[in-house]
Each structure stands twice: as C-alpha cells, then as structure tokens.
Length: 133
Image (cartoon, rainbow, N blue to C red; front, side):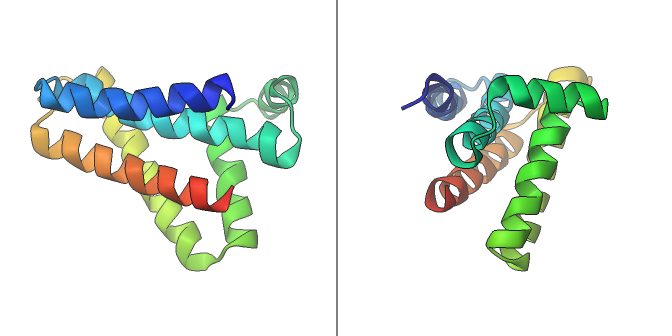
C-alpha cells in the first residue's frame, strides 16, 4: 500500500474519531483529504503518471493540484465507467470540497449534520474509487 493511500485511510478513520469527539470542523477537513489523497495516488498506480509529472501538468496548466486531479479523474470516470457514476462523483466531490472550504475558511458553525454528511460523501467516493481503481 502506498503511503498516500495509507494517509487517505487514516484521514477517513480520523474523521470518524473527530465526529465522535464533537470536533466537527476538523472532521470535514479529514473527510475531504481522505478523498483527495486517494485520488492523487490513482494517477501513478493506475495511469502511470508520476507525482513529478502531476506537478509539471499542474504548473503548465496554471491550475491548482486539487482541480487538476479532480478534473482528470472525473473525465476518466465518465469515459470508462459511465455518465451516472460521473455525475455522482462530480457532485459528491464538488460538495465535499465546498464543505471543506467553508469549514476551514468561513466564519460558520460546522454542525454534526454537516460533518456526518461530509463523512458519508467521503465514504461513497472512497468506495467508488476502491471498486474502480
């Protein structure tokens, strides 16, 4: 198991622990990063794109690493799995990224409802990625 895949699993586990301790905002952060790290390790493992090549693509496209990886994987899901899975993945990762941004940077209260929703989305995404890649 790659170190990044292991970190992804740790973050998913951490989100559950944090929710159990009523630490909702950091749980949302961990839920998102469990997916982002899982997405990032797919490119080298499944597509043979090294982490250095990812960095080069990101720099050449003048985009964020998060956007690059999400767009890349979304396109692959649409092409190789199907439109429904593409829509589900795209909507889920968009929502989870927004939850994480709001949780980390906005002056809002993060409730148990939001943190539970983020965790459930992260579990769905990770399940899809594990089953597909």
